[in-house]
Length: 540
Image 1 (cartoon, rainbow, N blue to C red):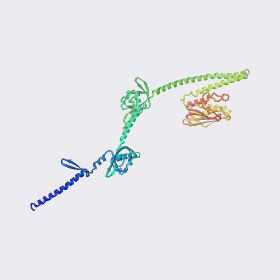
Image 2: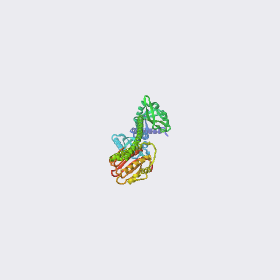
Image 3: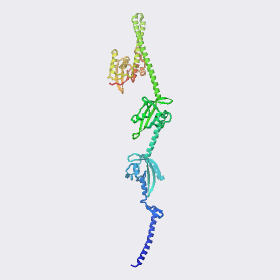
Image 4: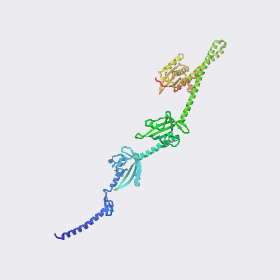
């Protein structure tokens, strides 16, 4: 091999390769840099001290995709028909759907039906202005409403119009707002409550109070010890915060405890105290709600009423004693007047003559009527004389039999029939029940029609009471007089045909009212009468 040939050949070849190759490489490099600058390749050119440096991006949308995948808000991309082209995991989590099931679904299925119109308005605004936002309710896969804020942006990608929707979950925000609102409402209710309400903490300090409590406690009391503001005395000792909180810890509530409250320079007040403990979720005592109801005026009214009742009872007792005395004292001279009148008529009838005998007979009749009137007045007083708390029971069947025995001669004389179904045992004194039957049956026998008296006695249970009915076929009572016949001395007929004092039905009413019942009549003139009265308790 010669010394120069290989060298010359190699040098000429190298020069030729370097020139063409370098030109080609420079052109390729310029094209690459230009493509990078134009965003046609996934790289960035950064100028440095050593000249331009090229950095690849592994795909132009990679960092944005990472950002979207990891952001806290939900996001979806919709096509023109509202179909979800893309969804990040956060949106799937918000609506409670599996992550892979959202893409390809219509966005409308995640909208509350009532808010579909709201979404259409948001979409229309975004189409017009490129961006629009608003609040509405989504619906979870389980059907629960989800308050959300949507931000819509219209984008054009590869010639296709899409809508990017950013979804903010507002459940926590709404919950917090509701808590704040409820707290404000509770505070307003407490402050404006008509009752005096105080909330104390576990140390017995006042942390909340109503306006009424502030007025009752005379001044500011927040963060002040309860015991320094309210000096409460119960029948068994002082009611202080320690006693209230100890009762709460023991699971007890104070309900309607009557106490007296002493205030410096002011009269003692009467209060009703009720307490209600407040517990945390972990059963830690947070405090106690104390309600203070001022009953001072009510107590004064009750005391005044009690004094009046006592004075009235004493006055009634005096009147009853007078009535007893007057009745007994009047009956004897009236009886003697009648007896002496009859003796005069018997012994001196020849000397008196017809006119004198008639006058004596009128005097004797008047004396007998007066004696009967006094006797009936005494019965009227006795009808309400027994103490109402006295316990008594009477068999109505036995009472009606005694009544029939009393009127045995009148029943035979008038050919009357008295029928009664099985009657109950009632919670009344037997003497009062007999008086009721005697007065009503006596009237039925007295105010009879031209037909023989037919009297029916029945009873029907109505709740805790028994409704008795005494029905006859007598002359009846006009509707105009059915209310007044129960008044004292009320008579519808003169004494020439029907004897009586007009007290019998008043006695019946007094007896029935004494036992908490009432008496009334149903009747038509000429068609008999049906008396009803109510008495308590008992059984058939």
